[in-house]
Length: 385
View 1 (cartoon, rainbow, N blue to C red):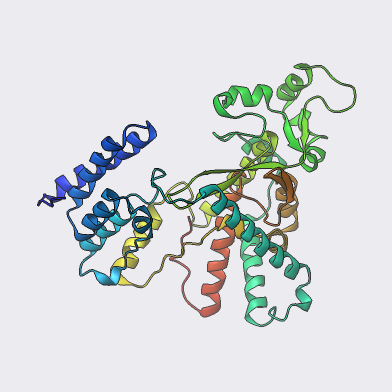
View 2: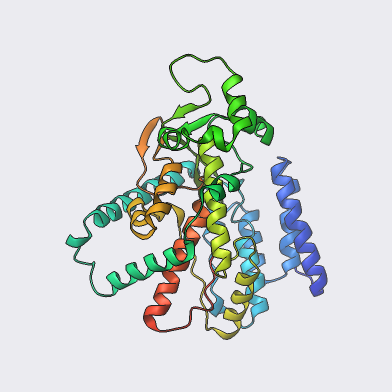
């Protein structure tokens, strides 16, 4: 692989075009040679020692060594050198065509179950906090501070807000998936709902959505035994989707009516976070703070692994206001089908739930704010995404 000098503009344009080409080529399942040419073009444009290393490992099939590469900022004398090395290192980290000899779905599910076990232990501790030897001093103060901060952020809500903010997301549900996923199909044919949510919405659903309720009532024959508007479901469905070369990502596909109301809760939390300086619709502030942190070394970025899978049920029960907890608990799915078995979830909600992202953002923001207050530093630079 030859390295040539390029202008900054040509490096950026060549790198961007090559990256887009690799995404297109791999998605269209073109020949390995065409993909290899695109990878070579991209790494040549970077023109740094690490890009040469990545190319040689890729060229000679050392895929495991390639994905195991790490980059240490302390090894570089300038931000530009680190940027190029980091870009080269991460370029193929999500390439699912690399041959690692691992079952990525199994790796993901095993990690998912480890998180479930961790949540189980946390739930057991929270059910008996008075007997927990670690629940004293600063830990008690921080838990109370997080609870107070969340209560302050959330305030109260009205039934109208909950009903009006409900919406469909773009993804699949247990009943509707693949090429059938569309807003029209969801409104006209979606009926899946958990028993707990059904008991919650049954008294008022027809008043809140009269036309929708009428359509669901008249669009199929009644069996005389149950509410013909809905199909009662006991669990969500766990699947894996592509994440990177080493592992897949575990998500849970929710019953559709649950998703409709989960999205309402997500929107309600999102609007309250925005009023408190956390805008989940934009990463601009995070990017600005990251730039300042890299320039002045006074800020740090913390990236949690399996963040949503680590939010346990009893933690949420402890720190959310009772009315909010009751609402979220009614709309979540408490069990899932995993590998032909049914598992009762220890986590509060998984990826795929319509309010998981907003809920975990709320918890992390409140926790960070409480820690800042405890150690006596300003919380003005806290940002969560």
